[in-house]
Length: 265
Image (spheres, rainbow, N blue to C red):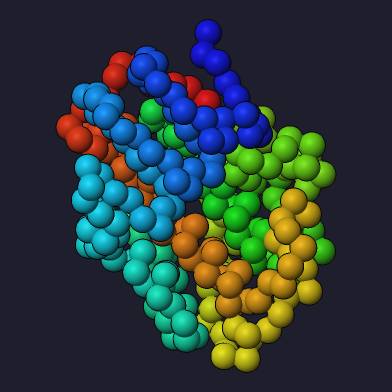
């Protein structure tokens, strides 16, 4: 049975020496200063938001970011958006990307859209998460709606189940893609309306709420909240198209063929 450790600091400053760590997974953790030295393996995957990454004494940070931007140009648009026009241009690109990707996804059997590739979220779960992200950062923080959270929203794994329930979320729901897309596309239409009317003054307005109760008590400005929505959209689109390649029978990054025992949600 796989050992699991959650919300623990017992490994802070630890040194793991001469251990078999094959298959080890570290997810949603603070890893500043992490070192992996004199180790070996056939394939190592690293994914996350890192300020600096050094591999065998070579700083690969700039290369990785440039390559991701080359493959996914909307990342740069989202990251560098500052003016109302920038936000509108980025949202145009996001709508275009998702329209094409969802058309591609609909050619797969519904059951496939619920499959997880290497334990990552399924395409349906990804749509549920983006619904939650826009409900929180747009519907709640920016628009201060009376009931911003749709029950099918799916927060990040770090949110405790009881807090998710307080927001009215039904985490164990098993909706079809189209059932999720109905509220998701309504929320996208709301984002379209907001960016179409965006001004510099509105971007600099301080929100009257934070995205959700689990978030820190601090100042949230419209500019920041809408930027989060843009970044969530482009990064999760990147993950979705990566996994669609596998679901369609292609190869994982690095050339590894998909296994036959894909994990179900």
